[in-house]
Length: 320
Length: 320
Image 1 (cartoon, rainbow over the protein chains, first blue to last red):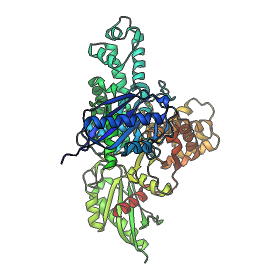
Image 2: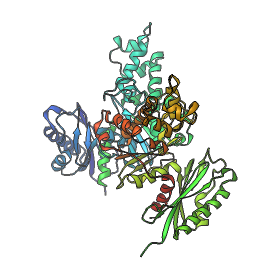
Image 3: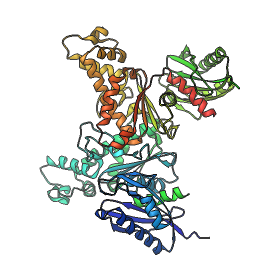
Image 4: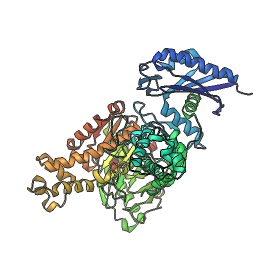
């Protein structure tokens, strides 16, 4: 008998909300719906519109909803299914998404922060047969992450675990959006990479591919820095070496502490591909402790919408 | 009915081996036996002498052996109960301690590395009612550690997890015994602390309490640096501030990544007490992420022989 049910997942950011669906076996169904988050209208308004979006996604695929997952940008109380603090979703703190959406959708709802959901999505979809212990690093504007141990998401005492972007890789180094200095995010987040690029370009007399792609050094996105590097821009290549150095330091810390089977790099910045992966691998290969570094696979995530897919897959896991 | 059984544990270092006993409820029995490890005589000779030592410990207390635990200095394959690599126990690699001692003692034997056993001992004996997630940092000549998640020791993919001493806290910083630079151990291990003291004393014209305790700056042990600090030596106080700064950086990394309920500082260096604890607490209180740092308790271990006790308690746990 064909199972005519599905599980939906949504990734709720400060600006956009994306929703996807997976089969009861966890296979992505190739569905995607988007809407503006419109955070100012408040969480109740949002929850109403989201329920309609998710219902619509199920309707379009001709399947019944079995469960739903929600990844929210901010500090989440996963048990209660609510935001504790949310710089990008102001005023949403304390609203019970789990209860509210559970009522309106008539199914169980899993809620966690967006980084944990993305990490879970990467763990399930990108690493082949699930390894026992894995760490996912999401490289976007900021750097987030999630820790999976013994096949389960490790949330920690207050649901705050996995803040890989705030490992200190350069004491008194560059400033991070969190207010501290020298965090991994300050070097491997998109804004940190752009800062590295500006510094490396400042001393250059003759414009290269990177200046031509970003006139006036505006819009120094990781995507364009990668493109310039592929076109032979020496400074752009140096940007990726610096980024990889710090990413290597952070990943090495994770390996010394947790000794995982796999580390997955996801998020837009991971689109730099081998420009990032190769020097990080070389960095890890130089570590004096051989056993944990021989045991760890380093992979780039290729699946889009891992945040929303991970939310759906987490809901599926919790419903099992 | 009184249970007339006990569990023994041994901590096997490069020079000395210590053994202790715990009751079937995990209560330390106040027994202690020591012998020279005499590593050069090889593992089979050692195993024979250790079996006699442990049997003797049981005999002295009038109890029967129920299980035994062994913490070995080096990289351990806990499943097979053997050393993989052991810089301080050369030639012992590959010897099956679990099987050999199991045969000679007639009980089940748990084997792990000494840092994991000490962490387990600290977790069970020093943190009150067992917290869900905790990290133990053992501050000795080197800096080791152990990670307890969901009430169980996290060993990782190759049994190498918990190498807290090799988190990088100062890229291109002081050299570490592992061959890398800037590891936490290079600042918070006894040899790193002595190096900090030598540097801070180098510029001092007038001798203070520390020079009087360590004439010619020989034997700059953490214990004496703490004593000098308590006698008002400004340089000695500065040594602890520097040490605490780096320890704070390492512990903050652990909290960002794992969000534990408790962090325990054990080992000889922890004898510095509040000289170390207070500035580390202040460092953690300054972190911008409040939730995980409010959730974490920082404690000093006071129980001696945690390595051997932890080995016994791990054996008890595995026998349960």
